Image 1: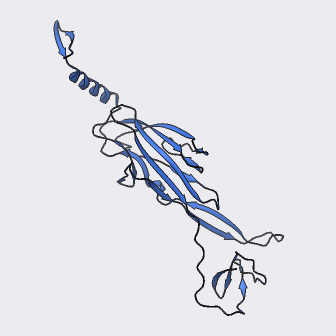
Image 2 (image 1 turned 135 degrees about the vertical axis):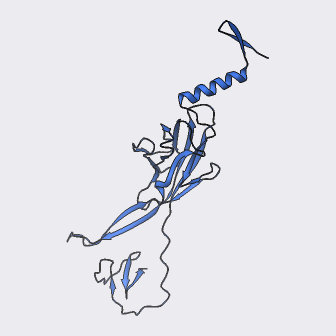
Image 3 (image 1 turned 90 degrees about the vertical axis):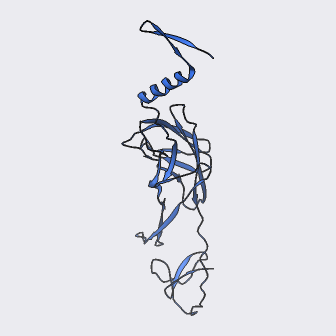
Length: 234
């Protein structure tokens, strides 16, 4: 067994590698970098998410039509907003209570052809616009602030449906724990086709556009109102 000697108070003290590891652990705790029995995790509310499962977030499209105030272009215009249900409830923390501060780094990589927007940990927003773009941020968890908001979202354009995929790697500054990696998948699904109306409407029912104006020549693919129901012109 390897031994080394440290002279203290005129006597020689014998230290083994196991004792050295204990001193290293105590030193790390005193520096405030290593909590006991804690592993970096991603949470949804109070639920600890498994790195083995892809985190799936569906983006909800909200379309709002406004009447036109331009006489030259009387057609109504549409504003598209994207909603991310429960996005604020995704946080970075630990699976056990902290008894010391924990310094860590979080790496976000874009592994899709859609943009990502990341505002988390440092509250500075940045776009990862192309596949392969990445950014590392450093942060600290404490007993007073044991969780930090992830604030990561897929960034989409109207009518460009698909998936924005991020790879999130959480690494403690102290080398006691291995990195934890999650895959986060944002889905912007294409809207399903409007169902056909089961009951036939009178042939002479007046047709209106969504702004309430009477339509004589409907255009295929556009939605109109007839007898209080929405219809899709064929």
